[in-house]
Image (tube, rainbow, N blue to C red; front, side, top):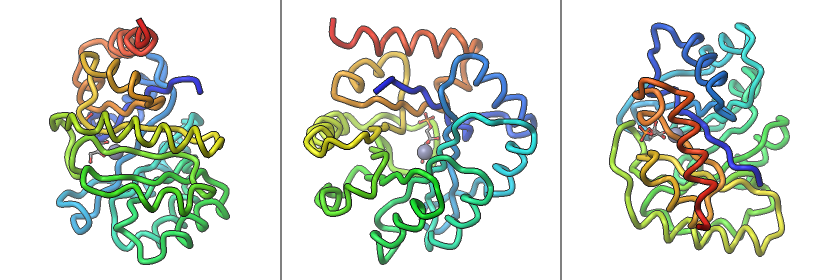
Length: 223
Ligand code: DX5
Ligand code: ZN
């Protein structure tokens, strides 16, 4: 699967969000990662469906992957489907009925993502893998940008890569948290193909150069 670099707008300048999104897309980003936090499932509060709707209205047509860190989650799925989400990713801890919640995303016409926190066991994945289009491995505890990458995530990525390959399904394997030019190669080598980066991209002086550097590191993973 073609590697995707997906900047997290959590680290963007929210006073000029449309411009930031346009800039990062013209700098070569493949998709936009949209972090939704509710001050309940995670101890932080960010943005909701209205913001995605505004970006769509402003002419942003590229892929947006919505990472829902909210509980309860089902009601908001409807709103994000309507707002124009392409992918919607959820944490198994945020719903009592995971199979039904993933089904809501699929029936709404979006692609479904399943997110694993650093301490969440992987067992559930094989039970519902036929409903999953993306697996997201959190390499920090969810809630904040700018945290340090947790090294044990590499092993988790490698284990999920095996499960995905054995399933034969076209599932993206995404990593989120503390990704930078200096560690992206090891994550790619472990088997990730979709890379979220907030601080490393929006905190840099030159988005295009940072994204190009990341792409080069990913391409060099085998050498
Ligand atoms: C954390 C979010 C991440 C975060 C990544 O809960 O899910 O998407 O914005 O930010 P960086 O790349 O700064 O770790
Ligand atoms: Zn995220």
